[in-house]
Image (tube, rainbow, N blue to C red; front, side):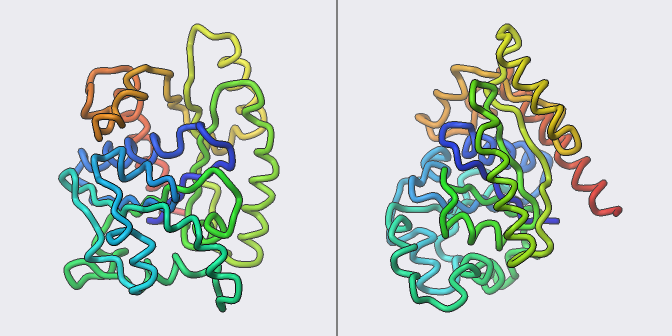
Length: 262
């Protein structure tokens, strides 16, 4: 299992933050990670200091059929395929396109880097998704192998999650039989807040089989880091959220190894 997507149709739950910082945590352990920004808001790229350029984005890579020359390398072992606002018009452009659900999957399959297929060059490929259940999201679900759902520890957090899981099961049945609901990460967790504890407990009641033990705590530094184009792990390495992401990285690797043994 190499290709993972971070998905939740709700906005502001920490998808991009987790994708960036988990990827960075893995690169610090000498794993090569490609982060694909498949969200028209292009926050994954900007959060790593990459300027948005529609001529050097995944949208252009889809047109050309290979993403190698558009991949950036902002940190050792961490590579990024940035996005742009042009991706927002993709659904309209693909109305009559045959096999439009497999566009991203085919791009990953056909693309190379240094003459090597992406899946052979990288240990992991992460895909950041938009806050919607659209054709873009369907492309992501068709292309990935494991799904990680960020769940905000706030009121209404679980609302809509059942619909997301229903969508995932439908994609698994009809388009991607290898799809696995890999994990659920609690985000913006405040140990002093009763509501955070209640949401965490309710999530465990329903999703105990996939929930990660490591919650990501609420921290101002997490919000500040993207404005400097840095993962919080690099922005303030001893911050409680930075330490949580490093721990999440360990837990992620342990879970990947356990899946590979099944």
